[in-house]
Length: 306
Image (tube, rainbow, N blue to C red):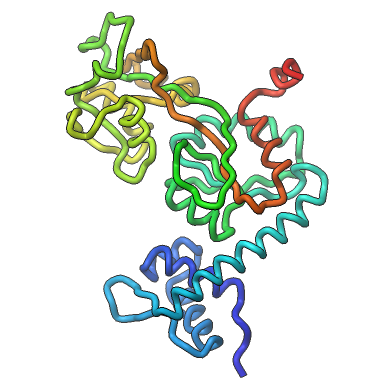
């Protein structure tokens, strides 16, 4: 007699469907590849039919597997909603919230907000997952995360988007070079400049180009990096220029790189939008809106606005 499918097995199946690779799927589920593979096999045995085609370089789903993934996503979403509804029935911010945040926001915005949240709501457990936008959106849909802190616009289906604030971009350039002594800067002045940007997959890269109305062909991309903390010293050493989010500048990202100067844009704002994203069916909207207040304004300013 076979057992019923478990939620863990359904999560494994959804991870395989997303990654199309057993090793990467196992890593995203924080289990070994053998554990994940065994779970998929147990699910297939429980349902009585194959869900995954093995033996290919990339994992393929059978027609039955494709249908099972759709049902699994619905089940996982409903289970998560049930858990959130129970948590939301208690006092505000008194249980755990799994927050996903991108690396170009998390280290600059969260530390101060979390300190204030912990002081005002000591029972809150905020579990943070830092990753690229695409991965975070997938984890939100699967019910593995409750809420996301993203740079917008970014496509997220079946989600509520809550605008927090606009984050202007600032040009960072090597001190003593072309932009030195200038007081005004327009996006078109950047055309043809040697840029250092984050590698493909980081939404900040696209937001910078879109905000400046530039394409890859209009700039010279000499180097790519995996983090802003890597880019800043490269700018200081004269390798190129970049655009930094104002929040990163305010957090002191250039303080250890005296060779970097910054210049703001004049006229039309060159910016990105920062916001929170959660599933539309989530019953914890009040918790998320309260969290949003801490991310936008410090406590003293909130009191003045009331």
